[in-house]
Amino acid sequence: MNIPWMTQARNCEAMRRLRDAGDLILPSLLQCDFGNLEREINELREAGVEALHLDVMDGHFVPNITYGMPIVEGIRRLTDMPIDVHLMISEPSRYVRQFADAGADCLTIHVEIDEDVRETLEMIRNLGVGVGLALNPKTPLERAKSLLHLCDLLLIMSVEAGFGGQSFNPIALEKLKAARQESDALLLEVDGGVNLDTIADCHAAGAQLFVVGSAIFGQSDYRNAVRSLRQAIQ
Image 1 (tube, one colour):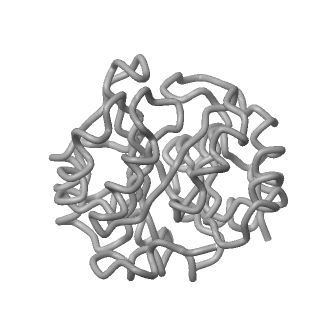
Image 2: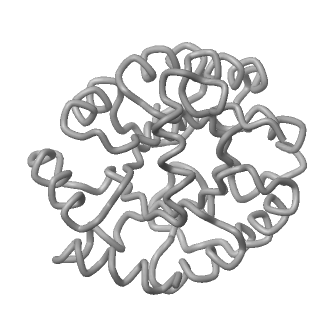
């Protein structure tokens, strides 16, 4: 399979860092203390975190609203860590250039959007950033198969996008296994309910990138939280 990031000049180094690092814990900054954002990022770096995950929600594709380009730009000024941006928005083609300009290293859109998904993926690729595709739990992997050659990353949601307080859906494990059989070049990411009880199963199913929220930010010591998660997948 062709790996799109290998042909890109702008942010191929960031994508290479994600790929070469092996298994990575990506804190979802949605749960961080935005009143002390610089402190939070510094504490995450000191805890051994090597990349960050940002969830962008528009109140339309999903029922919640989070943040947009200014937050991505602000975080970019604070760190050189790869920034993985998950766009849970209805019309990503209208905004992907702005997010890339703000400093995103990888942009992930949903296969469930009403737009032409292939066209939007190609648009992201032409911006010189990593290309990601996400699937909700109810969406079969088959819906994405014809698009995987355009992607660097496949994000398997283990909870329905945009809804809080959900339990980990084990269907994600089946999709991860099937996706790994489809390609050994794709970065496989899992998001939703990833914690000490579920991360080992995700790893065994083929995930390499683990988006974690409360299992880090709900703990008093980020270093111990990250260490425990890493130990769980070793």
